[in-house]
Length: 98
Image (cartoon, rainbow, N blue to C red; front, side):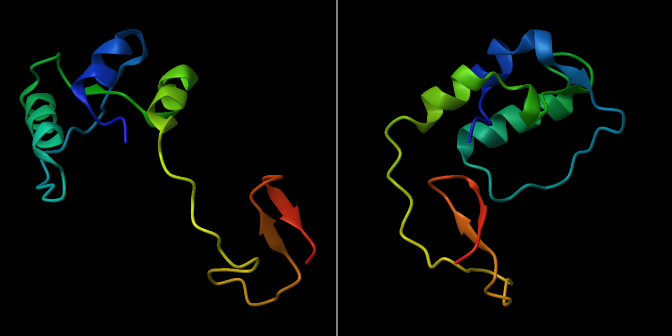
């Protein structure tokens, strides 16, 4: 999500320099993401450009989330939590007792 050219260019003022650029093979990117990645590796937008996720504006995140389906219902205690004494309450976004 938000790994696209429009997001990168809209946040030009938030770019940082990647201290150790990589050219790793990223086979799971879609076509547009792969093209942008190649441009970043090649230095097309500038040398060693990086946009860290935490620098993406909240309004851009909200716009990207509009229209996404609601998450599926999940059991209270999921994942590796086997203690059953703490559960995640997505509506309150905190840890609660069951």
